[in-house]
Image 1 (cartoon, one colour):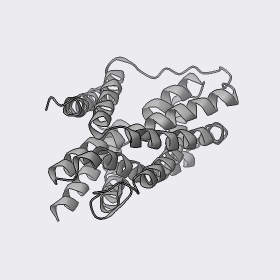
Image 2 (cartoon, helix red, strand yellow):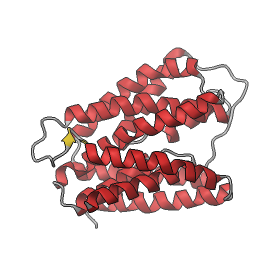
Image 3 (cartoon, helix red, strand yellow):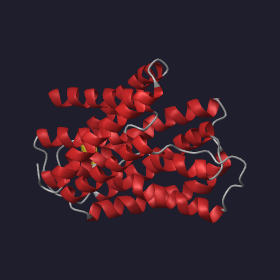
Length: 268
């Protein structure tokens, strides 16, 4: 029973973080699930893959909520989304296949490095709008979608930390970049979760209650909790100073990423 409680706590924390910091909960959910699954003695060789697949499944729910809210405010550029969507799906499926071939500990280290890079970006870089420039070609948008989908699927995230900078560079204002990025999270999560569910089917020694690399109870508990608590985080975001929030999330990612990296390379 405590396992379900930990799922709810992880989902609530991810939801508050997503609402507070404007970054999807994947960077929180994946490390949290790695720790939870390891603490409950899940087979070490499947812990990381199971954490990523379950995280992507939860992002399906949160991305639908997020894109609906942004779309109501006119924040989603659907013509850009359509040009990126196929690439996002292809990249996510390829990413799931690549992750399936990587050892769990190595994958932990890769995710840790990714979290550290996002943390450094939040500390030292900001997304710069380049308004007025023409949109890049269809091929560039498709290619960017493929690359973003692949990386996001491997890391178990919705891709906002990659999609927003690209859309800013492509000439979209920040609000449209964030809204369109939220919409891009849906094909990433759907294809990525489906890929992890598929590639995990033939893995032996899987714990009960899973479909491939997706833990069903974990998915349900985290989705409900994160969906509910994201609203709390969004309200707090309007009260607390933006720079403080950005630094706080950077510190959180430094801790999570550092722990995953050191664990993955066998230091802790």
